[in-house]
Length: 291
Image (cartoon, rainbow, N blue to C red; front, side, top):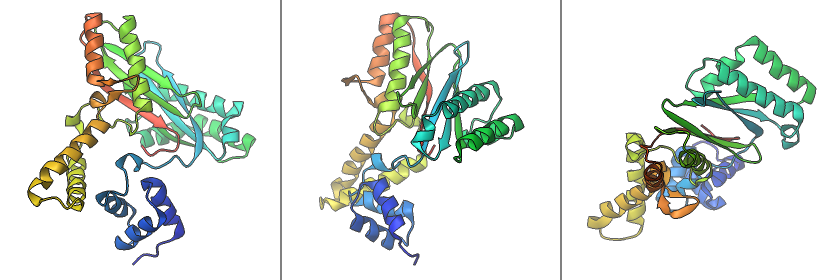
């Protein structure tokens, strides 16, 4: 059995929100496997799915750049060691420059791969090294997320601390309509601010493996209630449905008006503008969170 260290227990505690002893027992029961230990805690109802992503551990900033025609956007995540450096003009200038260069380049759709491709450019790599040398901290271009739209608009949001950014692709016949433009901004704010964050636009985009795992966990949670076996599948399906509502953008409650779902909001604005609207996709980047 792998040695269960204090650091492992601390990491699981931060990811799950469970107590130290529960985390240690879960790690011991799973031979130190962090993912399985998290599942064990969730099955016992100790951990929350919304806390699975854990807390951001590193410092840095995000940079957002949108093309002049409004059809393509990129968000870069640039990491450094301290918040002090993140607040310097040199570091902020580097982030802005990398965002502009990422927008101009032809990069992979995979965020981590896109970052590697941009850094393969000697001019970009030298630029990063120069700022590292000046500020005396290690830095890295962690990822570059991109999104585009045809026949619509990109709604964007950047949090005041420049550590969180989101962009939503909204298909629209009248992208210049004020109500449609406001919807784009509201959707981007929704993607940035919802807890847990949306993972898909529609529930039919959820990966089958994710659904299977959630059903397995939900059934284990249902058994913990001690209720009759015959009704456990129904209880479990209710739990899965709740998870799907939380991670599906169109099914989330609108942060500005919780009595409305995002689907209902889109319908309202479409009727008001006399337009046909649909959410095509979104990107969300928060400093330190895994993609």
